[in-house]
Image (cartoon, rainbow, N blue to C red; front, side):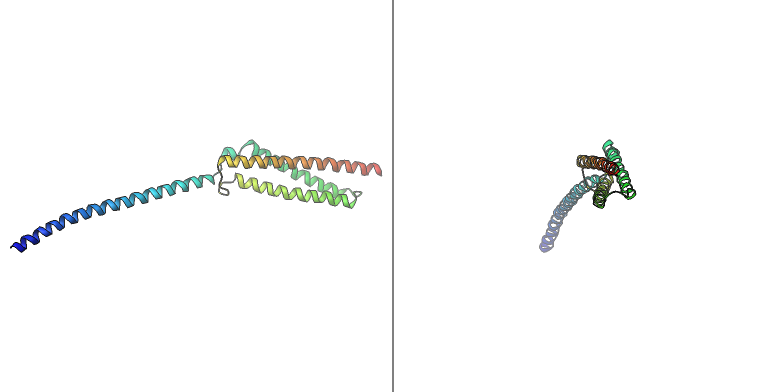
Length: 171
């Protein structure tokens, strides 16, 4: 009887202890879930942020500078095609001049290809991770390069025309 009372009291104390243990376990479990949710939420925020860097703002894609780059590239491409045609058709052009103009045209064609690929990468979603400011800075640099290419091809055209005229006058 004393033994039974002692065992009953011990069972009761163990049940109280088990209640404390259960509450402690629930608190730890809740804390672990909270930490995981916070961690995953932070990860999801980072994923969303970095994902947004791959999306191009339509205002940037359709900006006046982007259009200017395209116009400049088209101008240079057409000018190079005209130069190539002209040096093929002018039989009196000395070979060293022909080769020099051809090399300039080849170099310009390569540069234009690189510039157009770079522009496409900058204004196409999913290719480069950049903020809007970074994209605008890159577009500014590409725009300046396209202007340099336009100026160069204008000078090359002008010098080639002058060369053709001087060859014609000599004959």
